[in-house]
Length: 338
Image 1: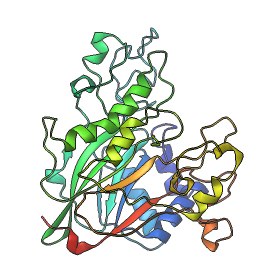
Image 2 (image 1 turned 90 degrees about the vertical axis):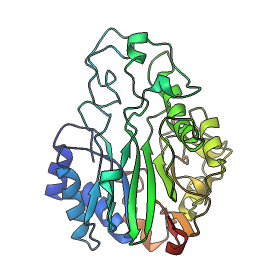
Image 3 (image 1 turned 45 degrees about the vertical axis):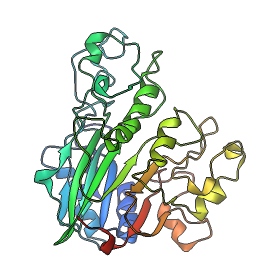
Image 4 (image 1 turned 180 degrees about the vertical axis):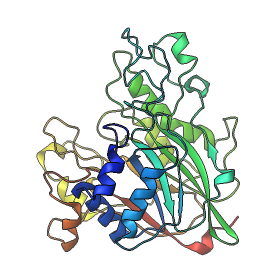
């Protein structure tokens, strides 16, 4: 729902375009209490997000609370950020994007969002990350280059009058492309490494004092595909977090083909279906990692087996409305204590 140009996503939502309508129907079927979206265009008044919220509401669940910080995607720098001699490409921005706000992050919630105390770390400079893996680009570029390709947030949600849950939200860029400097590979690593530094108290901003859940797309599998996998493995093993290992039967079955035969990771944990013959195969790239003290009652990836009645919600297997599968978990409310 984004990336083609300003207003295209809103047009498709208002027109009830088939792919968008199918996504709204899938979310309505799952009916989560809190939903983190990635890949939806951001605009100043959250018009696109409100329109999509209303489209979901036509199918059942209503989300009275919505939130989004501005995205780094498409934010112009006026500099040649990649060393190709140009200054006006989609890569000469704080995060790859043809226009400001392309393919951004957003939050929908049945519970009140404490937006006044939400923290946006998206302006944090890449070079200021301890032990950063910095590419060989100009000092002028590094002096302004933000770490977040989309955003890193801390958003508190009031799940009960006396219970608050912090959502640590992010979406990392891909570990491929980016030119000969391996810029994207290193940045993808550090966008996830940000959270280990944050939780270890090594950054200027402290971690939240209360319970939290880390939610995001790292674009990084801990074992397979492209990227520097150590960053993901370290985050999954962090002592402040637990990994409920959401799984699905659909992913297990989809991982039995020749494209995935050489993968080392458990196929049932995969969250994305990349069927291209030259692609990396199915990978685990989306995560929900609750704090160690929270009681997770169940978790999964919505990827039904092909013979399941729910499989139709994902659309045509050869041309699905989205290749990513929703990751979900349930947390016992009484384990969320300030």
